[in-house]
Image 1 (cartoon, rainbow, N blue to C red):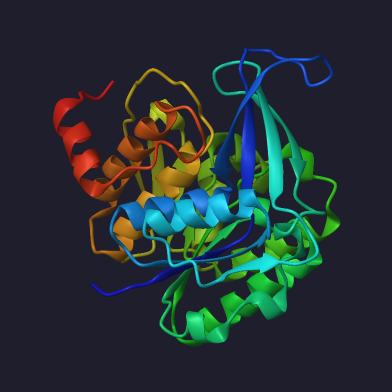
Image 2 (image 1 turned 120 degrees about the vertical axis):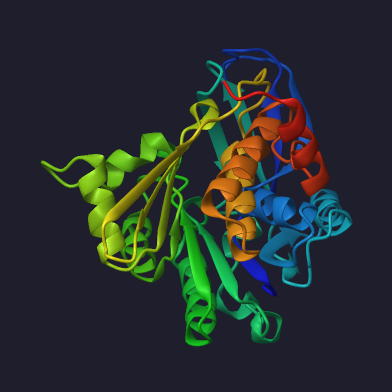
Length: 321
């Protein structure tokens, strides 16, 4: 089945604290730079699977920007939508780990090159043959980027294309008022919704349980909902032909978790790509769980992206927990 994915948002370099529980306000060692940014990791994983993907972002005209572009290009991402910006440096993030999955970030995004991504950076010619747009909630960090996202969304939807949405909520971004309004807008157009377990509560209304909320969202027009649970696996919600709620749980894989950053992005990229390629929901979830497991087993946000052959090998040799 022919499809082409596009995604938009932050592209940056990330520095990782060397020690667990390392504090930002005390001298300590960091390793990096690693290429990062949730939509960039998503795009990289789609490309590694062998599917066409266009990524829109901005980088500075600096060595970090060159490094980001080179990495994505060498992994097969279509980089024509990445604009080197004259007025700002490439974005950055510092990360420290509290436990196996809890992290604190200091982001330099709003004042960086990718923070200046705007409507005019979205080249309509590059979107001409795109059939699917993936939206990351973490990318809705300014009214400029939200405008850019709306432009792409309108173009792709007007041609009968589909939209996937990963809320990817960051506590560091909750004070951005535009973000919440844009969530409501994007949810109206979403076909595939990919919240993590911890994000579901953000979308649940008073006195509802998870199933009731999911049923309501499906009735509004979302076609597939996947709740990402990491090593525990993933829950799927959809409607059958009679309009009844269908649920499915696919177990995850227990691996030695070295770095959780990027695992949800790899999971989402794998699920969306394989669904668009015609895989069954169950198969797509199996591969997506494997993709997330491989992602956490490498240090660095984008270092755990995998090819279809690597996922097949992992699935063949690994038992479910």
